[in-house]
Length: 105
Image (cartoon, rainbow, N blue to C red; front, side, top):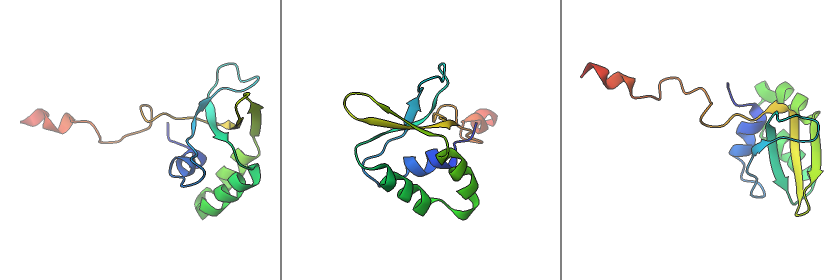
């Protein structure tokens, strides 16, 4: 499965120490989506996403933003994109990244 535009943008973010992670929010029954801990304002996060989104990803990012939810976890706020699946590096498509080419030697 390929990472979403939102996850890729947040992973490359130079914004407020944002680190996206797999999160399962209320009513998600274990399904994992992209979540971030947010100390600052939601407006700053949204402005960053809009500014960093390439033209070809705008529709996808807008759809993900429409699914934003928040949870208060006592020590801060979790912002999660309920309809944006989190894809770990282990499950990301990695076309030719294995060492199978060495089998002919």
